[in-house]
Image (tube, rainbow, N blue to C red; front, side, top):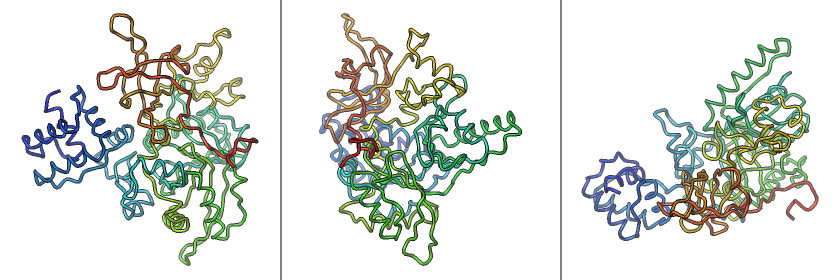
Length: 505
């Protein structure tokens, strides 16, 4: 690797143009950091960043040294998990970043703000490192701002028909105030437009959440689908589609979350909800009155679930109430039970839970079957079909003896020895005897697991190589690292479920 190749790495970390620092100072400082901390050169600047990321604070001290010796005033940014970094790059544009209703709360609490999904979002806070925040969530409770997600409300005649056309979920199987994970699908191919959560609030009323990074694509897709439905069914009645712009969405996650939220609701005089009776995948509207004369009573939607694998809740809150409600939660619970957490911890937590991140583990070409999400195709839909991509998806679900043909690749979880495997790393099979190993797949997400103390990753491999226990290799920094396919989640989920014996004590 040439010294020039280091420029994009250090400029990205310092958020400077490549030649904002004097060339000789940057080169000498970069060489010094490499030598002192034993960083190997690699063909891609990305791997130098990853090695720096693994060295943590020492590298930051080296970068601060560059600033001191060159009188640089740039602010160093936190070293991010790989998928968070790439989302950040993809989200950055010339347009002004949006802010959620909790932006001021983040800044007041030392949030390190980065571009993500078109919003300025906290990657971590001043009180805890990303790893510490991750462990805190597993042991106590954390509050995540997920207000950048897009919240929708579909109602009116035909709402269930529309959602059954664009996703493989069954409206008949979804009881009121129950929710399910699903996928918006492309017509014909069955590729995933976006992953989504659908909650039924009434006979023809649904609450739907989609990803911020897919906002423009999803809105265009849904607009087209609704127009097609209305033109093909002129007498069916109008579908009312509302995008709940400005509404807050708060994720309260961790084993103490139920105690924290129950105490808060009781302190506000909300006595009509008993959270132990609200199970995973269920939701409920609650009227809350905060202790402020300036705020009128308002409804919030409490859904039991989340993106961390822990027991928890996602709470949809009107815009004017979002910040006061979050502040009341934090104050009432106290820092001994509840802390703010950012994108960094959310990424490593969701990976341990085996959950996909759109744009990395899912994309427009991936079908639910290939992604290991066959269960989103509800039982009655496997018979009737009539959803986008049904021919492809149902063929992938059928056994070969019944004329089925599975997907060419499948999503798997891996434990990787040595250095962590990052997105884009090549997965290889056994040595062919000539020193070469065939490529069988690619890593889509990976990081060191704070809970397990091992390197975990997700990726796609050719069908036939996807069984648990299969030994493969992953090429990390030009070197083969041994890997084994394992079942996901990597860390057992702790969802509060109604079936006997599945809810934690």
